Length: 216
Image 1 (spheres, rainbow, N blue to C red):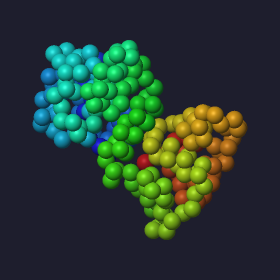
Image 2: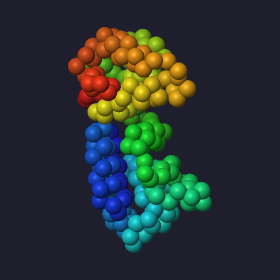
Image 3: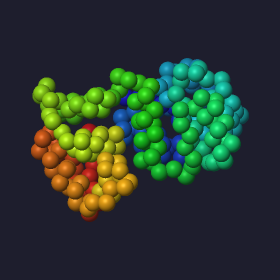
Image 4: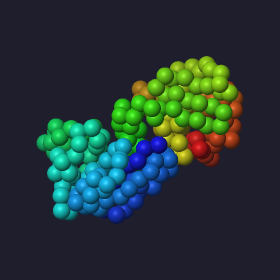
């Protein structure tokens, strides 16, 4: 898992991001102003930095301008103008997220950046299953399990959002796409197939009247 710095001066938002990243298994550190962020970056070896723009002592833009080019950065900020977004991206940021944000969107953006920058971190083990998201291969007891396109897409959505309850509608969006016109009951059918093929009856938990959660 990754080591992520959250540089955000609002305690509640910083804690919220920290809590959700830890649910995914990531290690986190917290900074509440630009100077503290710079100090931690000098002392620690982070895989990703989440930067607010409007922070005391040094803005997120100032911090980013002083960082090594190979350190991935996502701006998470209320500054939503096109010029601000262009400033952040032109400074070399990997992504720019505007507040208020959906936690699941933030997680997806974080995972996307980590997949691009940490090529060896796309393999997940659950019991006797090994899931390689990059190669789109699943092994059970060392033998490949053949999944359909939608089964793998659903498994990927559950893995990337592990320990989070996802509604059937959200799973449809993540695994089938926003333009899917079918019934949400198709999620139930595919979950049952995944449970049977991978022996994950206990790990893929049904959330009553809502959806599913992969517990790891």
